[in-house]
Image (cartoon, rainbow, N blue to C red):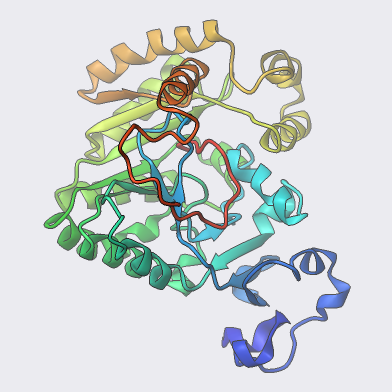
Length: 377
C-alpha cells in the first residue's frame, strides 16, 4: 500500500500524492487541522483502520520541561502527538484540545506525525549552547506506537542524540523497541541509555479493554527480556495501578513475579492519575464497563486528579515488601502532588525562568507541544 495514494489533505506536490482517499472538506476533524503550522498532508490507510495521520514539518524538536516540573529530566522529544494505543487513562489526551480536537476518540484516531523530527533535532543538538542534558522520549505520547513501523522516526532520533553525545531515555508500551535494540546497544557505548517498559495490566481481557491498541502484556514482557539480554538494566513502570481493578495483593504479587522473571532491574509504581481530558474519558469508560465502581471512582477523582493521599500511602505499604520479595529495586513515582509542590518551590528559588544565576540567557528551543507537566505513563 502506497501511502502517497491515500492523501486526504495537504499539498499534493509536497506529498507526491495520487487520487484522494477522501474529501477533506467533508471531515470536520481534518478541517480543524488545516491551519496547523507545517501541515504537509493527511493520510489514511486500511492498515490503520479509522486512524488519520497528519504529517507536519516541525520547526523544532526539543521541548524544554517547565522548571516547576517534578520530572527528573529537562528535555523531551515527542515525534508523535496523539496515540493509537488508545489507553483510556492517558494523561496526554488534553493536549489534543489545542488542535480543536477532542480528548477522546480524536486523540486515538487523529495522530500528528513530525516527519522531519530527526533532521530538526540534529540541527538543534549541533548548537553551541546545547548542554548535552538527558533527553527523554515517551513522556507524552508513545514513540513506538504502531505508526512507528511505517514512519521509522526513532532510528534517526537515536542516531542524532548519540552522535551529539546526549544521554537518552525511552519509555514505551511498544514492542517495536526490539527493532532498534542493536542501534541502542551501539549508542549505549557512547552515551547513557535508559530503557523502560510500561506494563500496567496483567489480565489479558482487562488490558484489551483499557489499552485496546497496545501489544499484549506477554509481548511487552518478552521485550523486557530481550532488552535485558542485550545488557540493559530495564525499568518497568507498573502504573497506573487502578483502584479496585488492578490493586489487589494477589494481582500485584503476580505482576511483580512476572516482571522479575522477565529480567527487569527496577520498578516504578504509582496509583492512577486522572487529569482533565483523561478524567472525563476514563470515568465515562468506568460508567459503561464497570458501573459498580463508578461511585468509588467519582469519590476518589471527582474533585481531584490524584488518588487520596491515604490510598497512595497504603498502596506503597503493600507494594514495597512485594518488590523486596522479588528482588526488584524500586523508584517512587515522582509525579505526585507532594513532589510537584517541592519542584515548584525550587523553581521559585531559581527565578521564573528556572535557570540558576550565570546560565546562558539565550532563548531555548521549544516544540510543537503546548503541554505542561509530563507524566511517566
